[in-house]
Length: 257
Image (cartoon, rainbow, N blue to C red):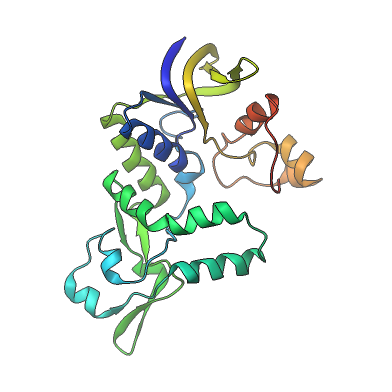
């Protein structure tokens, strides 16, 4: 058994962020990735890279990416204030959203973007998809003026590079199968590395390994007949193991499947 302070299951954007946050606090950290190096990154690899976060001024955007002063002055950068963010979220969800999680998402979003930049993520104005020229002046719309360089795959690559540089160990072709649980506390993770059983002891385990959209049996069970035929457009490695591991130790299911 290998031992770490924190074991993160997964290696997409959420997993990388969890690993980096723990490492910056001095913890020894590893990530367990079911995929090979070439297929790693979960569904983050398939994301477009557009980022939605709270901001009011171009000066705030300049804390996240470099925008020349003349460009900053001569462009309408739109806005996505905290209040506008709340309004949009509640409108599209018809208020069916967790209040505490919504508050965290919205009020911490800007500082998270600044933190991501410090972790090596690279952003650029989203000229191609979210702006038009009106009467000679460029105008952004839709409340997300920035995107990740290289899209979701670029974000995963940037954060992975930083994680490796900071000493986070990454185990590829390593699929987590169950939690090591003594009835009170989670003590680690059991996994299979290229089919060979392996155990990782940990003081804390973070399950950041996605949903079950690549599992036709689970799709049919939870979404209904016909869903077993759906074509998966993202990673083929999201089989629901993280959910199963948590439910197996009596974690409480929450929300809408």
